[in-house]
Image: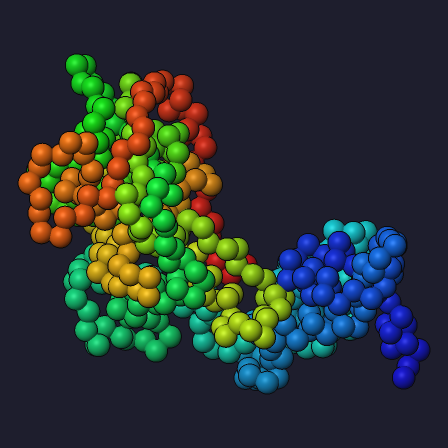
Length: 415
């Protein structure tokens, strides 16, 4: 053992020296020292893990998505060396991974990591193939191209053109498969759901009943919406009144709005794409009990959730731009899961950051009405119940303020 190795054997590092949650989690499960050798913080209980173990974990984790170029990349001296992009260890950590070390003012921790990790010319694992994030992006792009311009709802085996890109049918199946893995297909007991819908009240109008505030009658379902084509009635709502007002008033303008709050009169099942866990870092330690790597699964679901919730201008092209989310919705609506048929989708609001919107697979026949005298229909299922209603004013100042708060879309789902 060299004196250099001996020094590493006696150094410890605490979780606070890293910003990455995956590394923090590893350290918190391996703490043995009451003092950190790098930031100098001390405590009465163990707070730091052996540096050698942490460095090994980081090094091993890197090989999930990166490799030594010598193992997988062509090398041609006449053409400048490796035939593809490579990075030395310090550049991989600093520029590619963007590893944050919040307490490393003298860069001693960064230098120790570079010294301890494999001294490779690092490259993407399988450098001549797509990354998983690229596979997801291109698969969604292919799906949109097919459903917008070739076919809407029926897919054939020959839709599979590229072994790295999911066919439209495979993409739809993957959405539900991955959602089931992550636990996004959620059962809700009766009365748990709280969803609001807003309607502009023009002169002389007063909306108070469940039928007024619920899904529109079929005759009025004449425009294409985010999750439903013209002619197909669904119930659109939001997680709170302000979200419902923002969603509605953005296109209808200032005025007095009737806001209804609805609940579920029976148990329902939702696909929740608005409550996705964060994408774990490449340094996340996968528990032995977990049968899959959550990182690519969540990269995929975050991308799909973002795509289907993007705002679309009502400029005459919305009937085309909404087709991908409509096809996803129809597929989800048509499938049964272990918990039963899915009754709706929760997704991020396009106009109210950190809030959610709903599409429920309910029309006016599914709305419960007090002292209902409507004739029953086959499979009578009146489960959407109005539990409260109020009136709200929306001003021009409100509209201007909301416009400035539009969520800015992420562009990278690899983190």
